[in-house]
Length: 457
Image 1 (spheres, rainbow, N blue to C red):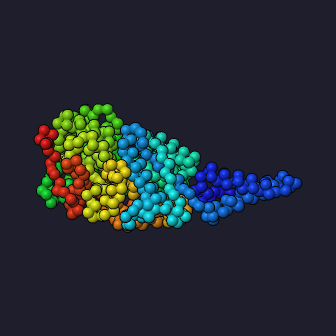
Image 2: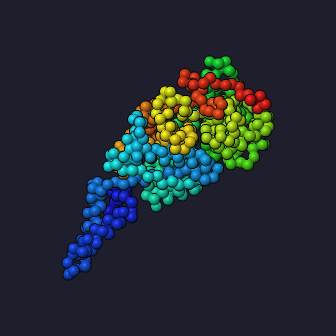
Image 3: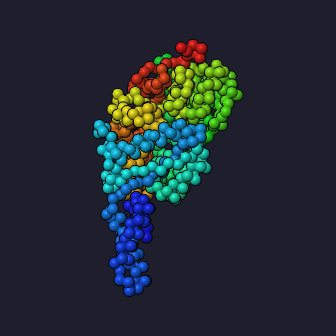
């Protein structure tokens, strides 16, 4: 007999306890002379009756298990910790409520109303930034932990392998953070991504440069690329190379390096020799920190560094570098200063800050949003059946005023890509991220060019 969606919500030990209790009572009531074969038949019928009661919702639905695959140890551990915190905050709001945040879905708490108040439980797995580990952990969560959906994985190359497993097992996979464009170009049936991807983000860089010339008279002609060489960086390099050519910029250098490097001196020297006006860079946290230190040591100061989020948006980037982090511009999807346009941003960030003594970043804000979108689909489906949940995700249509993101909303196209997301650019000024583009929503004028290292106060 197939396992009912509701039974999947019941912890195995609890269901076994009830079955044994029922069987014990039946044995107590049965006449001792009853044939053994008939006794076994009655017990099986009793177990089937219990399953039927569960399937009709006679028992309270206790929890919904969701697998969360993130880098909890290894080079991206600090980022993974922030994403884990954001997910845990989202679950706490859904399960227990959040006072005075009326516009946020599920802020009333009490679990998912269409699943009889079922609470969400996250089962975390550590992929250590390793694609093979991510794949094996996805399989373990599905086959052993019996999760109803997966969320993750931040690193694009890990998301690629883990989502292949979910596709094979026909389990919904919600990706809040990974930006490699090819993830949705695979047109998987069970894969959904809430964040915009690098096609949009890289295009934003070139739109910004064009508007910089048209509106502020700043003319950039020479660009250098400095990208890590996993899926995230290599895809970005291809996009930047193509758009630089299409838009008439001279690409003076394209340097790729292995992630988690212990030194980047030779790579940075190559970049310095090419004398780019602007460096476009894609790096996770460790490499972002190392490259900035190497730039300073070697006296590399272009007019601007345009960073592709990732390590440049991690809380540790500013915390570790201090004033040396200033003036970098990064593409983003979220910024605290946009709370003047959306009160939910401040309200939810206040909850996060009260708990973790740090503000959301674009990374953690995306994780929070992804979990809320998955919860919305679970609630609308009224079921944990994978196909029902997949259909609900496909039908998602959440307006922007229900999100903490500066997006028009969340609505997935046929490939599973959110088609209502958008990007912004933020600049680090005085140790804070401030929105500088699009110019019509900017909260601070862009500072251009970056001061030379020896001219900074």
